[in-house]
Length: 240
Image (cartoon, rainbow, N blue to C red; front, side, top):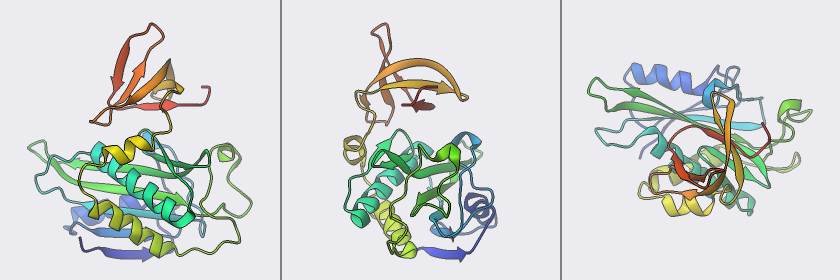
């Protein structure tokens, strides 16, 4: 895949900018890479902190060309690509929290947001893959609400090459387009854990995570012993 990488000091949202480019006919492989975002967001519309000089904020335009690849498959492939790249640069293992977060040393170091545009026939016309990686803690540290959750790949005095990391994530994503299930499942940080199932940010129930199936659904065991699968949604390992 040939990338067309456009670099910016600061944008509102890399995902929104790539959407604009998609509607204008930009080709697959168009990439927006920014040093900061003023309106970055994660899943469920949450704000994604994107301070200048501390992170990698990148969005990629994908055009599936009739393939059945959906947003979940794109997200899981991206999580594996990020995890592999994180491990390459830090020498430490990375874990994946279903469905779209990458963790290291128990802290979230990356969030992924995939947004799709449906064609009239119901297929995926295009998708925008957004990836935000915390490379180092921002000056003054992470916001108070995130200090127990967020982590970074590098210490403040460690050097890194943001552009090289971005390209390696892209290479890992596009070069390994096959089945990423095994790589994803072996990095799952939720197996055997008790989680709170959330809908709309509200707690629904607690459950034990049994595993992840081949369709990347989260398999859970409820309090009554019955088992079910979550195809979409959110879970928390923290009390809600």
